[in-house]
Length: 164
Image 1 (cartoon, rainbow, N blue to C red):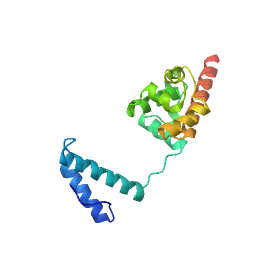
Image 2 (tube, rainbow, N blue to C red):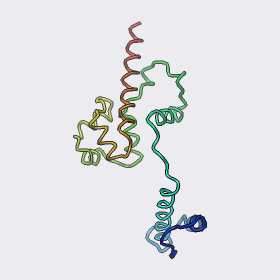
Image 3 (cartoon, helix red, strand yellow):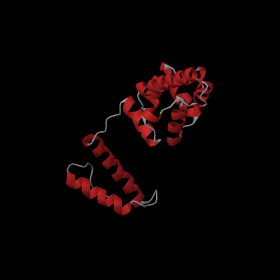
């Protein structure tokens, strides 16, 4: 096991990264697996202190999401298939983090029925729920509210375009 208690220099950091690479495929609950877990924790602490990453603004997050889907503002022609309910995003976050509805309900204090309705795009994300999502998931309230606002605006534009 490495004797380092804290990464203090760039040289320490680089040595630990090299060691992590050497033992990366170690099995859990073995001496090397325990060392790997310890070293990764040291690196994570060092990187968080020395290379902090700011949360994106809601607009930047939405733009990033659009880029992932190969969309741009010019291609956003009103179409029912293109309107993304915030529940879809919440569902993806929950899947990525292996969070069950029951667990989210317990963490937020909101009923499972409400959360399921949001996930199934039957209910909107309220401001109170968005605040609880920020506390629980560490994703800004503004992000959820902007998604809801964007959804509402796009749905309204789509419905109005259908009247013409």
